[in-house]
Amino acid sequence: MLLVVTLIHLLSGRTTLAAPSTQPIACDQARGGPYGPAMTVDICFSYYTRKPLATTFSAIRNRGFTCVHLVDYGAGCSKPSRMKPVADAARAEGLTPVLCIYPGTHSALYAAHPEWRQRMLTGIDGKCDWRTYLCPNRSEFVTAYCEQIERQMRECGFEAVQIAEIWFENWGGPQIEGQTNARYACVCDACLEKFRRRTGVDALPMLTDPQSPSFYQKPENAALYAHWVNMRIQTVQDFGKAIIAAARRANPKTCIKTMYMSDARVALDGSREFLGTDLDRMIKEWQPDVLTIQDAWQDWLQKDLQPGFIRDYAKAYRDRVRKLHPNIWLVSHADIGSKPESKRSIEWIQSFARETLAAGFNAPCFYEWHISTMADPEK
Image (cartoon, rainbow, N blue to C red):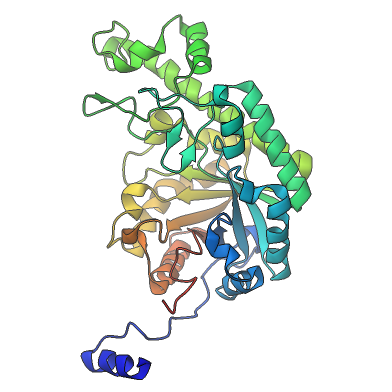
């Protein structure tokens, strides 16, 4: 049957059954391990229980990757006793395991401490897509979260950590097209009280009520709203510092990798206002070893996105970042399968890696192995 199907494809000019390219991922080879091409692996997906870890990690290594970002968002499947054998299996296949965390999201703490949850403008308790957010303005949460990170680092022997998507939800600000942004956060009691102490103003009407004297879109309230934006940025900065300190308590030589949600092709520096992330401050104050410039969803959801889109990101950030931190290792990022439209071919992935180098980055990283065409190319 396979011979017949193959013959039909050959006669019709289609080549979908051709063997995929095995060309390794292009990268700057001056550094390896956590600095090289990275593939994200979320071990909570059942895919990783259906085949030997050695087989999976061998396949990743043979594609030219030097490290794997092992995702931990506080679920039972990623607790230290279950993460350690995975990290060990990656090392056994010549890969550097990197603890990949999504600060603010920790399933166990979210379930155990409802009082720490973020609150969004319409009352949603910190849920957005697959993530459940806890508020970094809650000192008790920050302490508990950092203890979790330190324990994971120590027990699994991680030598690197990837701080992915450290932000406040949601892109677009408090209002979108004149309507309250349902998932804009956080307006929990801790955030509101912190702002009230600084300004004497209640942030809720400022963010939601066009009739309020303090409504943030009124020109006379620009400075007041700037206080709100800067408070959120300071919270993210402090949270990141606490995480880095926890990782280095476990291992003083930890390679610190952080991710910046880029907006190069959307609204440059819009992340300051919308997400509470300030690129310049992240670099200057955290001094990460590696900076990953994350592709914006407005790009990766494009079915016909060309690999060369990364050149626009380089134009926006490369020189700016290296002026602040000349020795920083710059990494690109591409989603390669979270949605049907973002499912990229192996050839696209390899081309993206080449474009990454041509644009002046050092290496690429990708999300995520099992949803990518690289995992099971025969399908």
